Structures are given as structure tokens and as C-alpha cells.
Length: 170
Image 1 (cartoon, rainbow, N blue to C red):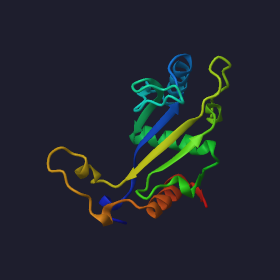
Image 2: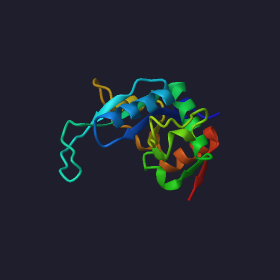
Image 3: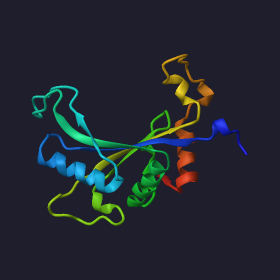
């Protein structure tokens, strides 16, 4: 049995739908996220102004839900099921986090197509960490994490294979 502080776990799962503009499509995207996660979505706003896309700073352009604990693992299992448990190797970054897309919300079990809503895809971002990472985030006595305690890309791939029975495709 390995040491308890070395065991990786899913810290959080962020589900994001980027719409690009405020209005009716944003309300529909919020409805989709609420149906999938049973949580109220938070509206995301544009950080910069882009005239080519017609986006102003501070304009609502999407919504997201952050899941933690058991809810995060359950949703991740459902999201991997939409992709036949396959993840591309380029989905992992060097800190051990991974991101992938789900092309349509109807790919989830129990979801039916609603003509009033339409088709919405989403991005799923997963943060995998070891216990003790909080020392880099806390306000008092903030410290750096030792290199050997940080999560690596290879360790995250092994974790996903063991915990979620995922197949990592090169």
C-alpha cells in the first residue's frame, strides 16, 4: 500500500459551455448544464474586447459548473462513457490535468434531444492532484510544492487508467 499523501484524486471537474453571446442561447446553455449536473451554472464573461467577433469586455459569453468530490467523479464517469472511455494523450497537460470535449449533450445516458434547446457541446476540464496541494493556494504561510510531490502527465495517465478504466489513445 502506498503512502496516503502520494495517492492522486480528482480535485474538481469544470464543465463549460461557450456560447459567444448573451441572450436566448445562453439561457438554453444554462438549462442544459443544470439538467446534466443538477447545479446552478455560473455565467462567464469576456475578459477582452474582440471587435472581429463582436465581443466586448464584461459581456456574458458562456456558463460553467464546478463539481467537487463524489459528484465530480460521478460526472466524469458519465462524460467518459460518452467517449467510450477513450481519451487522447494530448488531452493531458504537464501538470497532470486533462480536458476533453463532448460534442452533444444528448450523448449522455438518459438525455433526449429537445427541439426547443437545440444542440450544445461542452468542454470538460479535470484537475488531478495529490493531498497537500493547498499549501500553494492558502493565504497564510504559502509555500512551493516540492517537485516530487507534483502530479506529472504520466502519473495522471496511469491514474485515469486505473481509477476510471480509461483507454489513453496516442
